[in-house]
Image (cartoon, rainbow, N blue to C red; front, side):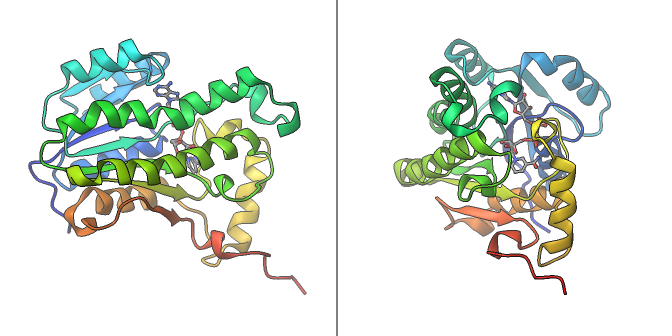
Length: 258
Ligand SMILES: NC(=O)c1ccc[n+]([C@@H]2O[C@H](COP(=O)([O-])OP(=O)(O)OC[C@H]3O[C@@H](n4cnc5c(N)ncnc54)[C@H](O)[C@@H]3O)[C@@H](O)[C@H]2O)c1
């Protein structure tokens, strides 16, 4: 059992009980970490419900839209230090831009998607790193669509590619401060964000029938890796994109059915 007693984990990206970030917060808490949440104002009522449910204690929760420099600054001015673990589990694309063919994407759609889904890791790291005086671990969430063309992932795939390289650059940048930065590449999981992807249910069905493990991935599978990445067991792992995907990413072509 990994022990995170005395560690302080800051988690961004809880929007509902289904959020990957919520599963990570619960697992980090179970390992002993104290949890702080940064949430987007549009999900405030859901956050209040979750916090009041007392499933896990959340002593600090504040709004923080990571694309707003003012909100990010105000958030980090209030948060207790030191921080040991940061989870960036954030992505956004306007529903109309999500499924557009890439050749039809305009600058505004491109900028909005990449600002929220890729760039936002940079201000979070910039604000958090000075408060990670004991060193620590930062992680973000990505998807195979950042490395290969996946049906209906389109613009978000470009954002994930930018996010994964930002992880490598940031790891090189702040490694000397003893802070690690990694990306978790999860297989498809039904959440609010995933519901924006057209044909998501079909995607899940195909996934379960062809992935080497012949099953899909759960929030808890991802959360278990997050606990490992938040712990000293992963002390020399940085700049990586690590797959939790039942092996799907090793396939070039699914097994042919006779
Ligand atoms: N669900 C999947 O199949 C899957 C697979 C691989 C990777 N991911 C990634 O996991 C992460 C979490 O997604 P999820 O599936 O848990 O969905 P989710 O909808 O529960 O979480 C997305 C979160 O992003 C937050 N967010 C968006 N814009 C923001 C902003 N400007 N400031 C602050 N927060 C903002 C939302 O508030 C929400 O909490 C995303 O990066 C997503 O791309 C999801």
